Length: 419
Image 1 (cartoon, rainbow, N blue to C red):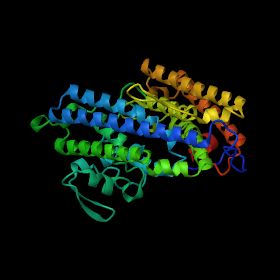
Image 2 (cartoon, one colour):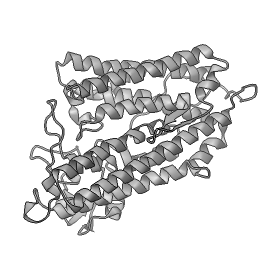
Image 3 (cartoon, rainbow, N blue to C red):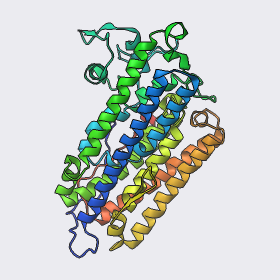
Image 4 (tube, helix red, strand yellow):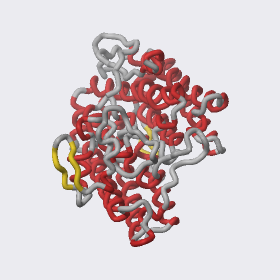
């Protein structure tokens, strides 16, 4: 778990809705509607990914693998915009590791390069379950002759309570589609050959049938997990009911999610830390080199929940009374400032996207001595930190108490990173 650090907050009694044209209940309804739409879109795009993978596995080809990779990238767009719901909602935060945990010790899943070591103190870091139908894990003999959702979910995922034993979710699928990125801070993503899924003598790197089983099971499980969360935000879902049950706490949940993702998670653990270490293994989407887009859509998601508007994958818009409207009624200056900071962070992340798509991938930006890349990355970090200060000011102005925003050593105690 990441370290939680309280930032500058006020402690008092939550402001009531009385006297506001926009009520807390209306704000929270919009918030829940956006969550339901985002997770539902995540289900839809994951189902498209599943269909594309099924077509590829039925008749493996280079074109089929490319189509599956494109579908994976498309599936990330709505999901990343839901991450602003994580930190303020325990239902989401407790579930999130099943679908988006990272970084992972990929040697748990499949073959890796000879130089791969895996994480410290992880006996399963080089298990390679695809090549190992029977093994001992945590002192228990495991029959993995068939790779199915139960094996992934109940046996492998976070096995031995090691968080790097990520067996499920987007990043396990990403690894199975791209393979390791062995280019370091040079250009290039993972280069898994399509023949890793070929049949008969055309199969490369062995166990193509079991690799297909793993990919199929992981995709099936991803859809089931995403559907669970979409249902949780539906009209009678437990996540919606929880956030609506205590309106003041619900408003706190929105700001906690915004501030924690903005500061400790995105600016710190996902961006600044990797730059400090000059380490492409700290990329969020390290196999596919899609990290720039994942960071961008995180920033968009933070803005979505504040302004109360989300554009669905079909182009329709979910919108309603927003936290921005609520804040603006009595603190117009703070609302205007925060909206400007949210736009600035999205713009800074758009610069990162443009730079990556223009030929300098995110892992290239991380290279030691790449001053241009460092400037792009730090531009995003600075914008995210800056907007967090305005989130804190809104928290103080609304007299909300008990909020803790996630921190990161990379921002709060940089010397600790190298200890």
